[in-house]
Length: 119
Image (cartoon, rainbow, N blue to C red; front, side, top):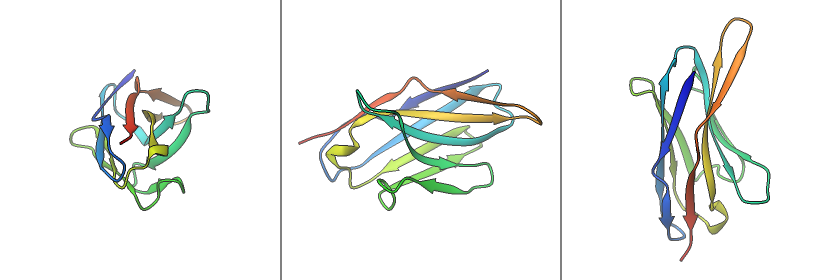
């Protein structure tokens, strides 16, 4: 089992910045991709950014150029630096991890953390 705990959310004005952190604990070996998703009430959960074990990062078009995902394997932590925040970035943000073995994968979710962009 892998536990994921997010931190760093809160209220920020439009144009501001926040950095989310997600710490993985438990049986963390063989974790491959770590992602960030977000969800607004009444809408489907949306993928935001991903970082695989090879260091490759990807972003949704809605955040590309504004958000940066990074990973510190020594701290078992993935970060999401969010700059130039917009009101439409308001959502609950979730950390997600995929653990891969030879013939099976497991995925894990954090509990979510609120990010509100408002003046």
